[in-house]
Every structure is written in structure tokens, then in C-alpha cells.
Length: 207
Image 1 (tube, rainbow, N blue to C red):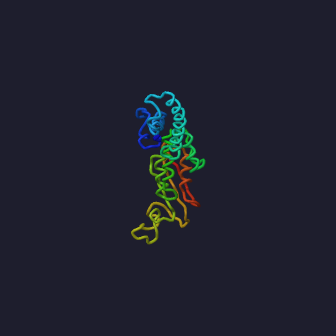
Image 2 (tube, rainbow, N blue to C red; image 1 turned 90 degrees about the vertical axis):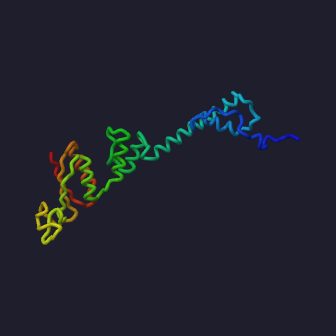
Image 3 (cartoon, rainbow, N blue to C red; image 1 turned 45 degrees about the horizontal axis):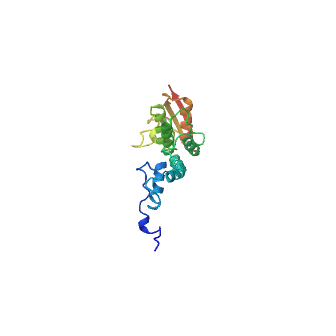
């Protein structure tokens, strides 16, 4: 009786696979293909077979490398080059440009801008502090802790006793900040960008 090649004992690890190779390399794909070939179909040394399989493996290795590259560029933490620029453009339009920053520095800038606390007093103070190196002074005219109140009790003892004259005009803040090493245009842009929609920001930059 003729024994069929499909019998289980014919499909043990066959064709003498190459030594262990790096995952995704041409040698790795040759190994994978050779291990599923029937053991008795080919001799231990089969240069023609190895050549044919190597041609197929080189294409698969290139596709695997492309897949790994695409996987990296799909995450902010591993994106690089123009793909990191595309991330910034997707999130912020033209509001955040790379300039001369390296990938690592630009990635930090992107993540910091995504996670920052926008539209709040604390967020505005934090951004200006990071930009200039000095904490700014913020005065909200309608905030008793900044300007005091009549009969303010423990919150603020008396009108004009907390620092400045106040006003009941809502959504208004006066900012005084040192320039530090930052450009005035960057400070102005940051203050405007961090303010809530519809708010009025009075900005004074000192040297």
C-alpha cells in the first residue's frame, strides 16, 4: 500500500531550518516556510529550495518592516519626522510648528499642549511660567481674592485691600509677566490661546 505524504509522521519539522534569526528578517521567513515543508521531500542541504524561499522571504520581510514602520508612526510616542509634523497639524493646525525642534523635543511640546489645562486661571499661569521661567501675576477684576469686597469678611478684608481696584465686568483678567527668554509675540500668543472664549486679557510684559 502506498503511504500518503499527508500522514502525520511526514510533516514533522523538516528541511533543516536555518539557525534562529531575528523576527521579521528574510532568514526568519525562510525558517518559517521550511519548518512546514514535509521532512522527506527535500534533502538536508537544498540550495535551490533555499534560493526560491529566500526570494519570497525578502518580499515578506520588506512588508513586515513597512508594517512595523506604520505601527510606529500611528502613535505620538513613537512617530518621527514628517509623521510627527502631521500629528501636530491634525491636532493644532498651524498653531504649533516644529521650528528647529528635534523629534524628541517636538513630541514633548505636542503632548504638553494636548494635556494642558486650557481656559483656566491655573492653566494660564502654568503656561506662562513654563514659557518665561517666572510665575505671572493675575488679577481678575470680579474676583474678591484679587481685589477685595465690601464686607468681605475672611475672604478679602475691604475693597482695594487685596491688591487692586476691582470691577464687576465678567470674563476679564489682567496679566503681568516677565519676558524672561521668551519673545513678546510668543507670550501674547500663549495668553490669548489659553484664555477662555470671549474673555478679555490685559497683558503687561516687563523686562
